[in-house]
Image 1 (cartoon, rainbow, N blue to C red):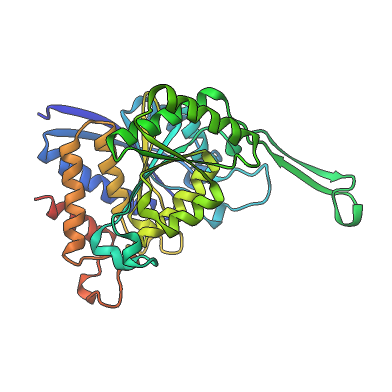
Image 2: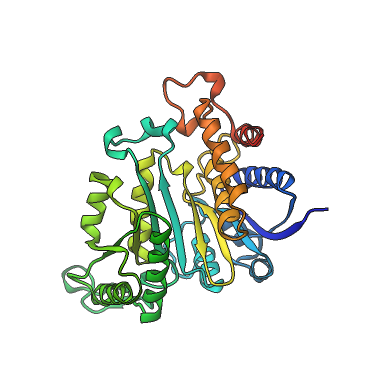
Length: 371
Protein backbone atom coordinates (compact mmCIF):
# COMPACT_ATOMS: atom_id res chain seq x y z
CA UNK A 1 0.00 0.00 0.00
CA UNK A 2 1.33 3.44 -0.95
CA UNK A 3 2.59 5.62 1.87
CA UNK A 4 0.72 8.66 0.50
CA UNK A 5 -2.28 9.20 -1.79
CA UNK A 6 -3.12 12.38 -3.67
CA UNK A 7 -6.31 13.28 -5.52
CA UNK A 8 -5.78 15.11 -8.81
CA UNK A 9 -8.44 16.73 -10.99
CA UNK A 10 -7.28 16.20 -14.58
CA UNK A 11 -8.67 18.45 -17.32
CA UNK A 12 -7.85 17.16 -20.84
CA UNK A 13 -9.62 20.07 -22.52
CA UNK A 14 -9.43 20.54 -26.28
CA UNK A 15 -7.25 19.83 -29.31
CA UNK A 16 -4.14 17.87 -28.39
CA UNK A 17 -5.12 18.06 -24.71
CA UNK A 18 -6.36 14.47 -24.31
CA UNK A 19 -3.21 13.13 -26.01
CA UNK A 20 -0.67 15.01 -23.95
CA UNK A 21 -2.41 14.65 -20.60
CA UNK A 22 -2.38 10.88 -21.10
CA UNK A 23 1.42 11.07 -21.25
CA UNK A 24 1.53 13.28 -18.18
CA UNK A 25 -0.49 10.70 -16.27
CA UNK A 26 1.76 7.93 -17.58
CA UNK A 27 4.85 9.61 -16.17
CA UNK A 28 3.06 10.58 -12.96
CA UNK A 29 2.03 7.00 -12.21
CA UNK A 30 5.51 5.70 -13.06
CA UNK A 31 7.02 8.17 -10.61
CA UNK A 32 4.43 7.17 -8.03
CA UNK A 33 5.52 3.54 -8.25
CA UNK A 34 9.14 4.52 -7.72
CA UNK A 35 8.41 6.83 -4.79
CA UNK A 36 5.72 4.77 -3.04
CA UNK A 37 2.99 7.32 -3.76
CA UNK A 38 -0.47 6.86 -5.25
CA UNK A 39 -2.02 9.46 -7.54
CA UNK A 40 -5.76 9.16 -8.18
CA UNK A 41 -6.78 11.13 -11.27
CA UNK A 42 -10.36 12.17 -12.05
CA UNK A 43 -11.07 13.56 -15.52
CA UNK A 44 -13.43 16.53 -15.86
CA UNK A 45 -14.60 18.84 -18.65
CA UNK A 46 -13.36 22.34 -19.40
CA UNK A 47 -13.19 24.65 -22.40
CA UNK A 48 -14.65 23.77 -25.78
CA UNK A 49 -15.28 20.15 -24.80
CA UNK A 50 -17.44 21.41 -21.92
CA UNK A 51 -19.28 23.86 -24.19
CA UNK A 52 -20.10 21.00 -26.56
CA UNK A 53 -21.28 18.77 -23.71
CA UNK A 54 -23.33 21.21 -21.66
CA UNK A 55 -22.96 24.74 -23.06
CA UNK A 56 -20.75 25.91 -20.20
CA UNK A 57 -16.93 26.21 -20.44
CA UNK A 58 -16.60 25.43 -16.73
CA UNK A 59 -19.39 23.15 -15.45
CA UNK A 60 -20.19 23.10 -11.74
CA UNK A 61 -19.09 19.45 -11.60
CA UNK A 62 -15.63 20.41 -12.80
CA UNK A 63 -15.31 23.15 -10.24
CA UNK A 64 -16.42 20.76 -7.49
CA UNK A 65 -13.84 18.21 -8.63
CA UNK A 66 -11.11 20.87 -8.54
CA UNK A 67 -12.08 22.03 -5.05
CA UNK A 68 -12.08 18.43 -3.78
CA UNK A 69 -8.64 17.62 -5.21
CA UNK A 70 -5.11 18.21 -3.94
CA UNK A 71 -4.09 19.74 -7.29
CA UNK A 72 -5.39 20.32 -10.80
CA UNK A 73 -3.57 19.19 -13.96
CA UNK A 74 -4.77 20.93 -17.14
CA UNK A 75 -3.80 20.22 -20.74
CA UNK A 76 -5.19 22.90 -23.09
CA UNK A 77 -8.35 24.74 -24.08
CA UNK A 78 -9.65 26.48 -27.18
CA UNK A 79 -9.71 26.19 -30.94
CA UNK A 80 -11.25 27.81 -34.02
CA UNK A 81 -14.40 25.72 -33.62
CA UNK A 82 -15.48 27.97 -30.75
CA UNK A 83 -14.19 31.31 -32.05
CA UNK A 84 -16.89 33.95 -32.17
CA UNK A 85 -17.17 37.72 -32.09
CA UNK A 86 -20.54 37.40 -30.38
CA UNK A 87 -19.94 38.69 -26.83
CA UNK A 88 -22.78 36.48 -25.57
CA UNK A 89 -21.33 33.25 -27.00
CA UNK A 90 -19.46 31.02 -24.53
CA UNK A 91 -15.73 30.77 -25.18
CA UNK A 92 -13.31 28.07 -23.98
CA UNK A 93 -10.97 30.63 -22.45
CA UNK A 94 -13.75 31.76 -20.12
CA UNK A 95 -13.48 28.40 -18.39
CA UNK A 96 -9.78 28.89 -17.81
CA UNK A 97 -10.17 32.42 -16.48
CA UNK A 98 -13.00 31.39 -14.19
CA UNK A 99 -11.27 28.37 -12.67
CA UNK A 100 -8.27 30.56 -11.85
CA UNK A 101 -10.54 33.08 -10.16
CA UNK A 102 -12.71 30.51 -8.34
CA UNK A 103 -9.67 28.65 -6.97
CA UNK A 104 -7.90 31.88 -6.01
CA UNK A 105 -4.89 31.12 -8.21
CA UNK A 106 -3.32 34.56 -8.11
CA UNK A 107 0.31 33.57 -8.80
CA UNK A 108 1.46 32.18 -12.13
CA UNK A 109 5.00 30.80 -12.28
CA UNK A 110 6.50 30.23 -15.69
CA UNK A 111 10.11 29.06 -15.71
CA UNK A 112 12.13 29.75 -18.84
CA UNK A 113 15.17 27.48 -18.97
CA UNK A 114 17.38 26.21 -21.75
CA UNK A 115 17.81 22.49 -22.32
CA UNK A 116 21.33 22.33 -23.72
CA UNK A 117 20.33 19.72 -26.31
CA UNK A 118 17.81 22.19 -27.76
CA UNK A 119 19.92 25.34 -27.65
CA UNK A 120 20.19 25.29 -31.44
CA UNK A 121 16.40 25.51 -31.76
CA UNK A 122 16.35 29.06 -30.44
CA UNK A 123 16.27 31.85 -32.99
CA UNK A 124 18.73 33.76 -30.81
CA UNK A 125 22.51 33.33 -30.98
CA UNK A 126 23.99 30.72 -28.59
CA UNK A 127 26.01 33.36 -26.72
CA UNK A 128 22.80 35.34 -26.05
CA UNK A 129 20.84 32.46 -24.52
CA UNK A 130 23.71 30.84 -22.62
CA UNK A 131 22.81 30.60 -18.95
CA UNK A 132 19.19 31.72 -19.38
CA UNK A 133 17.19 30.78 -16.28
CA UNK A 134 14.24 33.12 -15.76
CA UNK A 135 11.22 32.76 -13.50
CA UNK A 136 8.29 34.90 -14.65
CA UNK A 137 5.88 35.64 -11.79
CA UNK A 138 2.59 36.86 -13.25
CA UNK A 139 -0.37 38.18 -11.28
CA UNK A 140 -3.22 36.01 -12.49
CA UNK A 141 -6.59 37.04 -11.09
CA UNK A 142 -6.70 40.83 -11.45
CA UNK A 143 -6.12 43.46 -14.07
CA UNK A 144 -7.60 43.93 -17.51
CA UNK A 145 -8.80 40.34 -17.96
CA UNK A 146 -11.11 40.58 -14.95
CA UNK A 147 -12.13 44.23 -15.09
CA UNK A 148 -15.48 45.65 -16.07
CA UNK A 149 -16.14 45.57 -19.81
CA UNK A 150 -18.92 46.51 -22.14
CA UNK A 151 -19.70 47.07 -25.81
CA UNK A 152 -22.17 49.69 -27.00
CA UNK A 153 -24.05 49.44 -30.27
CA UNK A 154 -25.27 52.41 -32.33
CA UNK A 155 -23.31 54.79 -30.14
CA UNK A 156 -23.74 58.34 -31.61
CA UNK A 157 -20.52 59.52 -33.21
CA UNK A 158 -18.65 56.23 -32.73
CA UNK A 159 -18.73 55.20 -36.39
CA UNK A 160 -17.00 56.49 -39.51
CA UNK A 161 -17.33 60.24 -40.07
CA UNK A 162 -19.38 60.64 -36.92
CA UNK A 163 -22.04 58.11 -37.87
CA UNK A 164 -23.51 55.72 -35.26
CA UNK A 165 -21.25 52.76 -34.56
CA UNK A 166 -19.77 50.61 -31.83
CA UNK A 167 -17.85 51.53 -28.71
CA UNK A 168 -16.23 49.18 -26.21
CA UNK A 169 -14.14 49.41 -23.05
CA UNK A 170 -12.17 47.08 -20.76
CA UNK A 171 -11.13 48.20 -17.29
CA UNK A 172 -7.63 47.69 -15.86
CA UNK A 173 -7.95 47.70 -12.10
CA UNK A 174 -5.80 46.52 -9.18
CA UNK A 175 -6.18 46.59 -5.42
CA UNK A 176 -3.29 47.14 -3.04
CA UNK A 177 -3.45 43.66 -1.49
CA UNK A 178 -3.30 42.04 -4.94
CA UNK A 179 -0.05 43.82 -5.77
CA UNK A 180 1.43 43.21 -2.33
CA UNK A 181 0.90 39.45 -2.34
CA UNK A 182 2.33 38.92 -5.84
CA UNK A 183 5.33 41.11 -4.95
CA UNK A 184 6.02 38.95 -1.91
CA UNK A 185 5.82 35.82 -4.05
CA UNK A 186 8.42 37.29 -6.39
CA UNK A 187 10.81 38.34 -3.65
CA UNK A 188 10.52 34.94 -1.95
CA UNK A 189 11.28 33.25 -5.27
CA UNK A 190 14.33 35.48 -5.73
CA UNK A 191 15.64 34.50 -2.31
CA UNK A 192 15.60 30.86 -3.43
CA UNK A 193 17.29 31.76 -6.70
CA UNK A 194 19.85 34.47 -7.57
CA UNK A 195 18.48 37.37 -5.54
CA UNK A 196 17.19 39.74 -8.22
CA UNK A 197 13.68 40.94 -9.09
CA UNK A 198 12.77 42.89 -12.22
CA UNK A 199 9.40 44.57 -11.71
CA UNK A 200 7.73 45.30 -15.06
CA UNK A 201 5.13 48.05 -15.38
CA UNK A 202 4.07 51.05 -17.51
CA UNK A 203 4.40 53.66 -14.79
CA UNK A 204 5.11 56.45 -17.26
CA UNK A 205 1.51 56.16 -18.53
CA UNK A 206 -0.78 54.04 -16.34
CA UNK A 207 -2.02 54.94 -12.85
CA UNK A 208 -2.31 51.26 -11.95
CA UNK A 209 1.39 50.89 -12.81
CA UNK A 210 2.37 53.86 -10.67
CA UNK A 211 0.54 52.26 -7.74
CA UNK A 212 2.15 48.90 -8.60
CA UNK A 213 5.65 50.44 -8.50
CA UNK A 214 5.05 52.23 -5.20
CA UNK A 215 3.78 49.06 -3.50
CA UNK A 216 6.55 46.84 -4.86
CA UNK A 217 9.17 49.30 -3.56
CA UNK A 218 7.49 49.56 -0.16
CA UNK A 219 7.45 45.77 0.26
CA UNK A 220 11.06 45.60 -0.90
CA UNK A 221 12.29 48.29 1.49
CA UNK A 222 10.37 46.90 4.48
CA UNK A 223 11.09 43.18 4.15
CA UNK A 224 13.36 42.33 1.22
CA UNK A 225 16.16 44.90 1.18
CA UNK A 226 18.62 42.04 0.59
CA UNK A 227 17.08 41.46 -2.87
CA UNK A 228 18.21 43.52 -5.86
CA UNK A 229 15.21 45.32 -7.38
CA UNK A 230 14.96 47.05 -10.75
CA UNK A 231 12.01 48.70 -12.49
CA UNK A 232 11.59 47.99 -16.20
CA UNK A 233 8.95 49.54 -18.43
CA UNK A 234 7.07 46.81 -20.27
CA UNK A 235 8.09 47.89 -23.77
CA UNK A 236 11.74 47.97 -22.70
CA UNK A 237 11.33 44.60 -20.97
CA UNK A 238 10.06 43.10 -24.22
CA UNK A 239 13.22 44.30 -25.95
CA UNK A 240 15.63 43.30 -23.18
CA UNK A 241 14.24 39.76 -22.92
CA UNK A 242 15.53 39.28 -26.44
CA UNK A 243 18.66 41.43 -26.11
CA UNK A 244 19.96 40.21 -22.72
CA UNK A 245 17.74 37.38 -21.39
CA UNK A 246 20.45 35.87 -19.20
CA UNK A 247 20.55 38.99 -17.00
CA UNK A 248 17.01 38.41 -15.73
CA UNK A 249 16.33 36.27 -12.66
CA UNK A 250 12.75 36.81 -11.40
CA UNK A 251 10.40 38.96 -13.48
CA UNK A 252 7.20 40.07 -11.73
CA UNK A 253 4.38 41.82 -13.53
CA UNK A 254 0.62 42.25 -13.85
CA UNK A 255 -1.73 39.94 -15.69
CA UNK A 256 -1.77 41.13 -19.30
CA UNK A 257 1.90 42.14 -19.41
CA UNK A 258 2.80 38.73 -17.96
CA UNK A 259 0.68 36.93 -20.53
CA UNK A 260 2.51 38.64 -23.39
CA UNK A 261 6.05 38.59 -21.96
CA UNK A 262 5.91 34.95 -20.89
CA UNK A 263 4.99 33.86 -24.42
CA UNK A 264 7.80 36.01 -25.78
CA UNK A 265 10.27 34.53 -23.31
CA UNK A 266 9.10 31.06 -24.24
CA UNK A 267 10.44 31.56 -27.74
CA UNK A 268 13.93 32.04 -26.32
CA UNK A 269 13.94 28.30 -25.74
CA UNK A 270 12.93 27.57 -29.34
CA UNK A 271 9.63 25.85 -28.60
CA UNK A 272 6.52 26.50 -26.56
CA UNK A 273 6.20 22.72 -26.47
CA UNK A 274 8.86 22.56 -23.77
CA UNK A 275 7.52 25.00 -21.19
CA UNK A 276 5.34 24.27 -18.19
CA UNK A 277 3.60 26.61 -15.77
CA UNK A 278 2.13 26.61 -12.28
CA UNK A 279 -0.79 28.71 -11.05
CA UNK A 280 -0.73 28.87 -7.25
CA UNK A 281 -3.21 29.98 -4.62
CA UNK A 282 -3.22 29.79 -0.86
CA UNK A 283 -5.06 26.44 -0.79
CA UNK A 284 -4.54 24.70 -4.14
CA UNK A 285 -2.74 24.92 -7.48
CA UNK A 286 -3.22 24.26 -11.18
CA UNK A 287 -0.48 23.08 -13.54
CA UNK A 288 -0.51 23.32 -17.32
CA UNK A 289 1.71 23.61 -20.40
CA UNK A 290 2.37 27.09 -21.72
CA UNK A 291 1.30 26.18 -25.25
CA UNK A 292 -2.18 26.07 -26.77
CA UNK A 293 -4.45 23.31 -28.02
CA UNK A 294 -2.82 22.98 -31.48
CA UNK A 295 -6.05 21.86 -33.21
CA UNK A 296 -4.20 21.52 -36.53
CA UNK A 297 -2.39 18.40 -35.27
CA UNK A 298 -4.99 17.08 -32.82
CA UNK A 299 -5.65 13.37 -33.12
CA UNK A 300 -2.55 12.68 -35.20
CA UNK A 301 -0.45 11.36 -32.32
CA UNK A 302 2.46 13.71 -33.05
CA UNK A 303 2.04 16.35 -30.34
CA UNK A 304 4.92 17.12 -27.98
CA UNK A 305 3.95 15.99 -24.44
CA UNK A 306 7.10 17.29 -22.72
CA UNK A 307 5.58 20.55 -21.46
CA UNK A 308 2.73 18.52 -19.96
CA UNK A 309 5.23 16.15 -18.37
CA UNK A 310 7.22 19.09 -17.00
CA UNK A 311 3.94 20.44 -15.59
CA UNK A 312 3.75 17.20 -13.62
CA UNK A 313 7.28 17.94 -12.41
CA UNK A 314 6.13 21.34 -11.12
CA UNK A 315 3.10 19.78 -9.45
CA UNK A 316 5.29 17.34 -7.54
CA UNK A 317 7.60 20.17 -6.53
CA UNK A 318 5.12 22.85 -5.47
CA UNK A 319 1.99 20.96 -4.34
CA UNK A 320 3.36 17.73 -2.91
CA UNK A 321 6.84 18.72 -1.71
CA UNK A 322 8.33 15.81 -3.68
CA UNK A 323 11.52 17.53 -4.86
CA UNK A 324 13.41 14.29 -5.42
CA UNK A 325 10.63 12.88 -7.59
CA UNK A 326 10.40 16.18 -9.49
CA UNK A 327 14.15 16.13 -10.06
CA UNK A 328 13.87 12.61 -11.45
CA UNK A 329 11.45 13.82 -14.12
CA UNK A 330 13.68 16.75 -15.05
CA UNK A 331 16.67 14.40 -15.35
CA UNK A 332 14.66 11.94 -17.44
CA UNK A 333 13.52 14.64 -19.90
CA UNK A 334 17.09 15.95 -20.12
CA UNK A 335 18.41 12.42 -20.78
CA UNK A 336 15.86 11.77 -23.52
CA UNK A 337 16.79 15.02 -25.27
CA UNK A 338 20.52 14.45 -24.81
CA UNK A 339 20.12 11.04 -26.47
CA UNK A 340 18.64 12.77 -29.51
CA UNK A 341 14.98 11.78 -29.22
CA UNK A 342 12.62 14.42 -30.57
CA UNK A 343 8.99 15.05 -31.43
CA UNK A 344 8.37 16.67 -34.77
CA UNK A 345 8.17 20.24 -33.46
CA UNK A 346 11.66 20.16 -31.90
CA UNK A 347 13.37 18.05 -34.58
CA UNK A 348 15.74 19.64 -37.07
CA UNK A 349 17.42 18.58 -40.29
CA UNK A 350 20.10 16.69 -38.36
CA UNK A 351 17.58 14.55 -36.46
CA UNK A 352 17.54 10.98 -37.81
CA UNK A 353 14.08 9.90 -38.94
CA UNK A 354 14.08 6.98 -36.51
CA UNK A 355 14.64 9.42 -33.61
CA UNK A 356 11.46 11.41 -34.28
CA UNK A 357 8.84 10.09 -31.89
CA UNK A 358 5.10 10.40 -31.64
CA UNK A 359 3.32 11.66 -28.54
CA UNK A 360 2.89 8.31 -26.81
CA UNK A 361 6.37 7.10 -27.72
CA UNK A 362 7.90 10.22 -26.21
CA UNK A 363 6.01 9.56 -22.98
CA UNK A 364 7.33 6.00 -23.02
CA UNK A 365 10.88 7.29 -23.54
CA UNK A 366 10.62 9.55 -20.48
CA UNK A 367 9.29 6.69 -18.36
CA UNK A 368 12.16 4.48 -19.52
CA UNK A 369 14.66 7.22 -18.70
CA UNK A 370 13.35 7.37 -15.12
CA UNK A 371 15.20 4.11 -14.52
